[in-house]
Image (cartoon, rainbow, N blue to C red):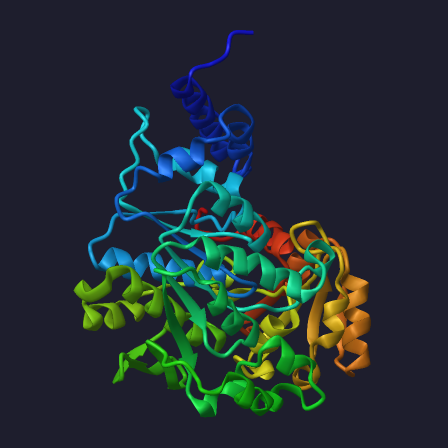
Length: 435
């Protein structure tokens, strides 16, 4: 068969992208087609962007932080391309490009801000050298895929080593701090961090595993001393009101996102935006823009069902689950937990035993669902948390949950594939934003 020209391959990919959109999903499939037919597609298109590529990676918070960073940079006048569906493999970036390009192959952007899975980011930076990188944290996430936690750190080290302009690092995560030694000469290192009173609330993986628990973070004070000066520091917060120190100046704003962890994600996104915009950054406008950020899909996203709010909360490792649980009083919500073990979730769900579920005792859990529903129910039983129903089928579970929880607002803690399936089910009975 005669080899197709590159414009024809792109048009084929765009056609497949359009058809998969009509079918309501399959966002990465057109990217897989491009990988096979035109392997250099992503690198070639991103090389045309005058302000280069910004890469966001790490274990927790990539999707929400990327969304924040995109909105902040747009407020500064940048035309930003991003993989907004959260499909964070290289083929997901290819699919997103196909969706944003005109039929003539034009991309209306001058900078790309991309969320990438740690393992796929390693392959990405061999093709595309990011101008800026934000490396968030290293937690035990999907160890069946990545092996031990230091494997994830080594992946992130390769990203740092490939970045040509600025690497923004989390000052409070010892493994992320160690990445500074991999930043090449000529590339700047910038930091975001926490005030001393807040550090115990955001434990690193080492803190989670230490005998002293999350409050044992003081063990790292000597390891990290002298502490780097953070460009942005989360100083304190109460409800949605946030105090930050930006370049040594105290500022205040609101963050309208569920979860205390998103307060820290806001600091990370702001540090990245300042690094990208450089001396021309309008700090006041950036801080103000934080108050306008809305949740990324499935990350505290609220959907109205039968006149009641239902929040979808993605959980995939002990730290993320712990912080989600700490973000609201359990008795205020009807609660469902949906745990799947598909490839995108991680096959190994043993991490659930490292989450403390005692806070759920007061209100219990109304429904446990998903392919690993019985494992989750057993885990809750060990922490003496009452479970009303165990319903593995997600559609049936959601229906029973909504019908059986009275007038209370609802929240669902869910793994990635269960979140996607729940959104599809909810779209039958409620208005659900397209992704």
